[in-house]
Structures are given as structure tokens and as C-alpha cells.
Length: 191
Image (cartoon, rainbow, N blue to C red; front, top):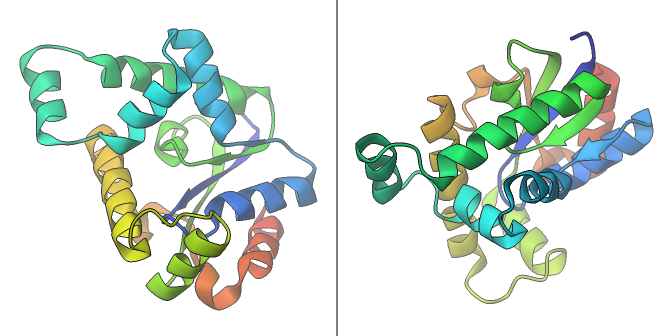
């Protein structure tokens, strides 16, 4: 596979999804994010809300590990295989940006990837999830910590790699300091 792929992993509230979409627009290539969940739903027959819940909200916990190891593959494992297949197929079609879903790991030996991690300070992230995402149900810090914890657990469970660890990426960018537009410009220029 010779296609150049940009994978973007991100802390919740850091603007990684927005950066990915901006980079794709500048490069005139597709960006895949929530579309991956829709494709997984079509292929698996599961509802997309269930997929989102299973793959991000509850992943990597004790019961998940116990179930996977003691009782054989479960729905999470089935969805992981479908996710790997879909991401690989997307990367084979042409250059693109893929946000999240462990695409950096899935494509590690299959594509020419620029692996990006977006992070930001807590105050920038809190401001973003309240002002941009409109989240107000719980304290922003609590929501951010819970979401990041689940993302890290999911990533660790299926990749055996530490999510957000700089050595696992080609570049990490602080969107709180650099800003969304500057981060997008840097990623575009590295493409």
C-alpha cells in the first residue's frame, strides 16, 4: 500500500477531530471519523450507538478483559476485527485522514502513515467541550478525565501500547498553545 495516510489520535476536547477535518480539506482528501462507526454498524449489524458505547465508553475494563480471556471472543473483539478491516480498506482506497479508532496501530505495517497526537492543557479542553461541544451535564474536568481514561484503556487493550505516549507518534502537538489552525497547518505541511 503506497497511499499516504494521516492518523490523528487526540485527547478529548483538544480539537483533534476539527484539526483532522481541516487538514483533509486543505489537502483535498477524505477524512474519516464518525463515518467509521457508521461503516462498522453496516457491516456488523449492531446499532451505531451500541458500537460507540462498547468501543469507547466501556472498553478495557475488568469485565471486558475477563470476558475476552476466560470465555472467548466477545462483541468488542468482533467489532475490533471489523474496525481493522474497514480502516485497512479505507487506507487502500487512497490518501486520507483517519481520526481515532487506533488507526495509527492498525496501519503501522500497512501504509505510509503520519501518526499525529493532539493534546492540550486542561483549561483549554474544558473551555472547548463547554463552548464548542455544548457539554454541560457534568463538570468538564470530570468528563475529560473519564473520556481520556476510556480511550487510553481501549488503546492499551487492543494495541498493548500506551495511548498518548510521544514515542508512539511521529509528532505531538499542543492545540491549547498552538491553536487549531496552526496545528492543521503544521500537519498539512508534514504531509
